[in-house]
Length: 90
Image (cartoon, rainbow, N blue to C red):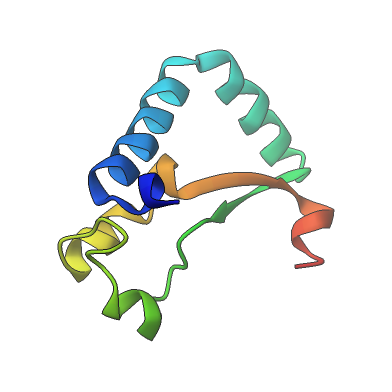
């Protein structure tokens, strides 16, 4: 767990995830096609609204400040794809 909470490692992991996915254009076609058909949705990993808990621990999660947090929200490293029927149950 310590590996994941180290801010350098945390940012590296999500940065690599974003880089790899940006290089793979075929998967983007599949994702976009299924989004159009309303089968999958994008879901944020870190919430769009900054909670008090996260706000107090920004450095722990690898963010310099609130601006850094909000700039990260729309990056692919903060998103996952989930089937619509599963997301509606959450």
